[in-house]
Structures are given as structure tokens and as C-alpha cells.
Image (tube, rainbow, N blue to C red):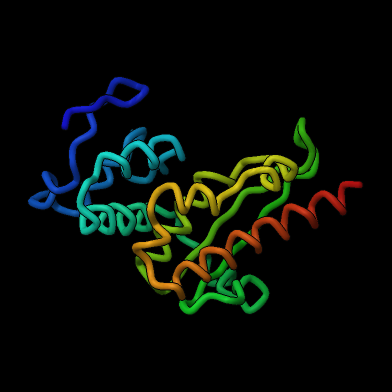
Length: 180
């Protein structure tokens, strides 16, 4: 299937990239201009929808996780640990209080599980850089289900995803309360 993204780049089925060295497979992530660039949520959804096989979707999810910026060792703390996840997950939230629409939140995170790192990357593409009110208005669970992730992940992973979403939403509520 030959589809083009918003910027005119061709989306290639991930299965066609199996022979490619994974260190350069990040170029598949549409919108990435270099290895360290993160894809935006529209590109992730579009790329995910072109992948027919769930093995390819899992590989793509893992590759998204590999593109997460590193989380400093000092941020791997109990205070940043997300409760309710079967895997270890850390979320480091930065709040810029004076955004035009209120406090703006940015996130860094990590997990000891490859698939969970991919789920984190999807959430960061959705939420990071958004103002707190917008974060509270975005339904990540609906997105998660719309991408078909719920039925293809273990219940523990799905619950962990929900815990991470709730932690992000809690940080957004706290940022709004502090700003008030």
C-alpha cells in the first residue's frame, strides 16, 4: 500500500524494513528529520493504520519507544515512579507556568519494558507541550482503543497505560491548581 503523509513523504510498510538495521529504522517514523526526532501523534496514528500485521505494529511501537529521549538517572526516583504499572515506569513532568493558555506541561519518561516505552512515546506525542486544560480535555483512552491497542495488549499493560494517563492528568490538574 502506497500512502503519503501530510508532508508528502511515502509511508513504507514496516514489514518492508525488516532487513534494515534497526538503528536507522527510526527514519520510518514519519515526520522524523533525524534519528533523535519524535513523531507527532497524527503521524503515529497514520503509520499505525498502514501496518496490517500486529507483529509489525509491535515492532513499530518498540521503535517509537527507542526514540524517547533518555531520562536522567536522577529522575529514576520513587517520586517519579508511576504506580499501577506492572513494569517499572517513571514520569518526569516539567511545568512552564506562563503559557498563553495556562501552564504548559512537558514530559520525559522511561520504562524497563520495550512495549511500555512505545506506549509512553505515544502519550508524549499526544500530551507533551500541551497546556493543562487541553491535556484534561484529550481522551487518550479513546485513542488507545481506536488504534486497537487494547485488544492486543495484556490487561496489565492496558491498566498500566491507564495509570500513566491518570498520572499525566493528575499533573495537569496540579499545574492548574498552582496557577490559580
